[in-house]
Length: 263
Image (cartoon, rainbow, N blue to C red; front, side, top):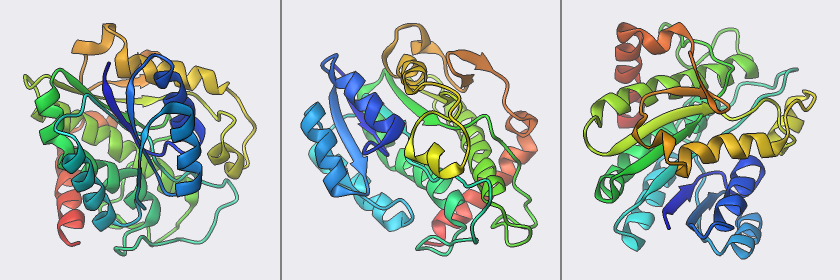
């Protein structure tokens, strides 16, 4: 059975995915911010818990170090942790490192965590990285990457998710031939989770639909050789055009390196 790290495993899709995978005998590493809720998931799944606040890149690095100290390989990394949005909006917030909060948590944190765990993933190859993205996508304005002008929750969220899809494609190209595959997915639309409830939107899809679509990328045999793709549910789809624009992705890589290196 595979050793699988799920971030954001204390609630919603992450928790449901953990419970589904545990029922098949997979060994789980469970990340969350709330130790009490995480302990409940661990009791239900037998998983090993790791707490970290993804609004701090230092905590992301410490999380990766703790995992590397405890384990010498990792079969699957599911980057699921994230902050949603509210359609009526909230005030712009900053991470512990001074970055726009949704960009920090939904994009910079999983990028850094994946980079820090690449050694374990390479050692376990064939292995997989699954990035939970969204059908909601919007390009970053490189003249205002921190969204200091015209901020909305929705814009911040959509920018972070397209950035994660772009990173997925870049990393897949970098890891070609290594045995580590990297794919992104919009699991389902407005599932009955705390994130969806906070958004103010009506439920559209059942949680089970998102779990099934995500799990397919985690352990189904068919996607084992597929990498660098974006999926809408269980079907391969086309992301926003910027994901296929080499110049846009280059500028995003440069911005990302600077934002992570500055911390």
